Image (cartoon, rainbow, N blue to C red; front, side):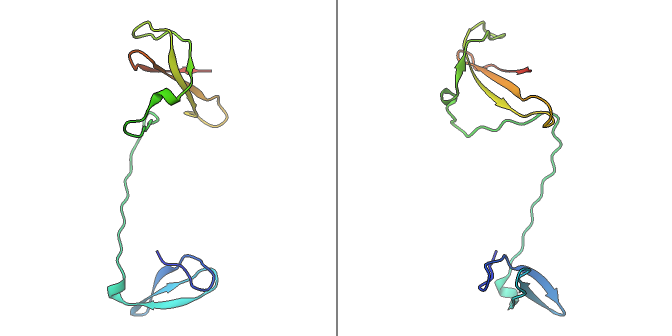
Length: 111
């Protein structure tokens, strides 16, 4: 990625006749690009998701989350970490998630 020396806009690469130029869409600045100076790559991934994905940083410490008194359906413990996340459309209530402090079981509660 290269920026315009005049206005700071992002230069876009375009083909003009038999050459490549980088053109600023803001101010019109353009410069010629040699083939040796260019490289291009594109990577796309499409994923169909049925459930929202919760991504945690490896080694994340759940103890930084707030705790509440709630019954764990898996082990019967009465304390869990909790957090809220928007899992449905924006006009619906957020979903509250719990993680048992004893067994690590995760479950959700809808309002």
